Structures are given as structure tokens and as C-alpha cells.
Image (cartoon, rainbow, N blue to C red; front, side, top):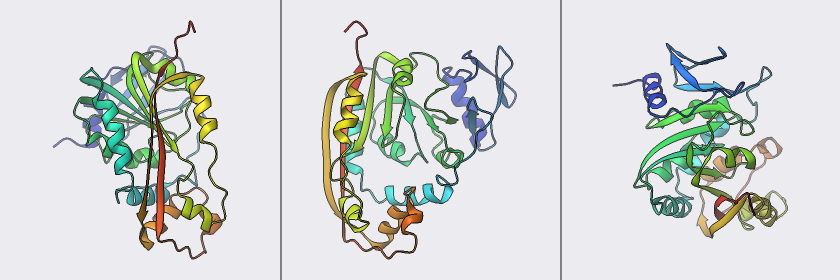
Length: 282
């Protein structure tokens, strides 16, 4: 049975789409490293991850750490987002192409995409990119056809026009970089909070209602033509354990660390936008 490093090497060979984040030249495998023509060297870890960030000042986040992402995974695994996954997979399955490269942008620990791909009926190769080393280390739990990269959304280490589908699940991203890496017939699927997203929790914590969705949509439309959009909204009963996991997966968890939070229901309300790159002549 292959270990994570061997699986990573196999995935790299099958998908020659990585480039050096420093000089933008292509990368080739040499022993346990990737190297470009300018001799910039990137080491593949034993866990099957690759650090492709052009920065000597990289620091792993103290907030977005293993504990946060483990709580996130536990919450996600309780199936609150199943209807969202169904809809995303439906869009991907409707594509005419059968062999596709998928970029999980701001992947976190990878469970959202894992759930989506369980529903996809095409041949796919996955590139998971996140700036958190802790998140990417956990994402290697899902190794099938998965290249796990610590990378910068503002400097994606991918060659031009190499991606068929970009999935952005509740994460920021760089519009220009997404346009650069998307193939001419590629799509971006962006998932954002709806106006009722986690309303019950927000009210208990005395947070304001979420109101940025229209702003996000308008900014998205500056770069992409929306070919489909859908709101998925459902209220679920929630357990105390799940409430705690939800709190602990928030970067604001320190603000309510010692509070006793009790809610009986939670609303999962997401907008899904499917876009294609705008014609530059428009």
C-alpha cells in the first residue's frame, strides 16, 4: 500500500500543472523535491504536502490551527451541508467534459470537498490549496487524486489555463488569479453565506445579521458572468456537541470561550454562484 508521499508523487506525475511561485517556471520532480529551471527547490513532506509560497516571512497561523480545523471537520461531518454538496455536484456533473482538474481554493482541512466529490460522477484530479499548514496536513487524510499545497491565493502555483473547476467554499480569493488558471471553458463555483446563515448563533452572540452577500455578488460579477445561482437554506436541530464544534471552528472563538452557549436550531443558508470568465472584449 502506498504511503502519502508516494501517492503525492504519483499525483504530481499525472498532473503536470504546478509552477514555481517565485519565477513562474515549470517544476520537475527530483528525488524528494520539486525544482524549477532557476533552481528554486521545494521539498515534498513525508505527509504528502508541498510548500509553494513565495515568502521568507511565512508563519503558520496561531488562530487557524489544528484544533480549529478538527472542530470544523467534526461539525461538517454531521451533514448540515448535504443539500449544498448535492447542488455543487449537480453543476459539476452537468459539464460535458469527463476528465477534469478541480481546484479547492482555501480548502481548509478538505472535508467540504471530500463530501462534494463523493457525489461527482466524473474522473477528477484535485488540487487543494490553503495558506494554513495545519489545514493542509489534515487535508492529506483525503489522498485520492489529491495534490495538497500550502499556497497563497494571491500567487497560485499553477500554470495558466490548467483548471476546469474552481470551488471556493466560504473563503476569500483573488479574482485575477482565478481567471488566470481557469481554462477557457472552465467554471468557478463560489459558495457564500446567505443572509440567514447561522442566524441563531449570531443572535445569541449579539452579532449583527449577515448583510454582505449582495456586495460579494456584485464584486464577483465584475470578473465573472453568472450562469447559474441558487440559494440553499434549511433549519436543523443542533446538539450541544455540534454547537461547541461550531463555536470552536470560528476564528473569534476566544471572544466567547468561557460563555455557555445554548441553541436548539441552526440555519444553514448558502448562496451558490456558478460563473465563467467575462469576455475581455466586453
